[in-house]
Image 1 (cartoon, rainbow, N blue to C red):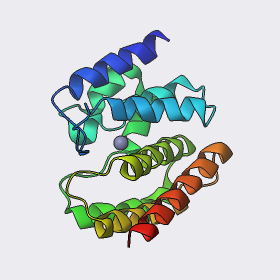
Image 2 (cartoon, rainbow, N blue to C red):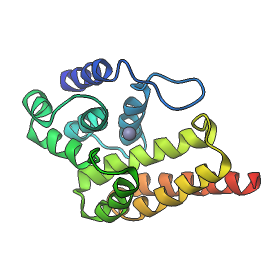
Image 3 (cartoon, protein in one colour):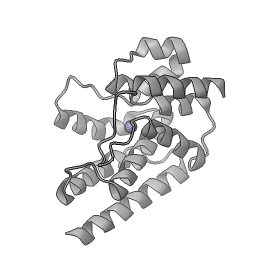
Image 4 (cartoon, helix red, strand yellow):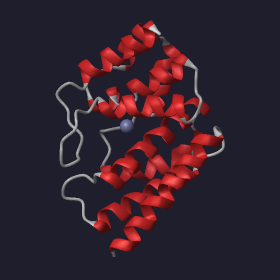
Length: 179
Ligand code: ZN
């Protein structure tokens, strides 16, 4: 429990200057908290390291946080899961997106769970409150790409799989109606 609260505070400090891309510019920290909560509630995940990795999953990619910092505070297992959820920002966006599809099936079971919860929360956010400036086509493109990544992440946690596929179907149905 102490470690989970520590990770929540750590992530809140790291993401304190960031906002989500939705119209209301929700504080960024809402997202990792949502991902960790989804893992616990829907996926029945009780492994503290996995929940902590979920709370920290965007810190290396989107803030100045380093692998060593996470390793020293939360241990190497957490740091490795976070690293598996981190895109290489030195690459072009299109290449990063291609690699996500390619690398999804190679990830550890723990990282697959965090990634599936991450994608679920991102898709659910787009359904209710899309990023400002995203037209229907852009949302459809995102869903089509996310579906390919998700295919490589399935098979570890049945309720997480069920829920992400349901979210994909719900979003695709809504977007079809809008075209
Ligand atoms: Zn995320």
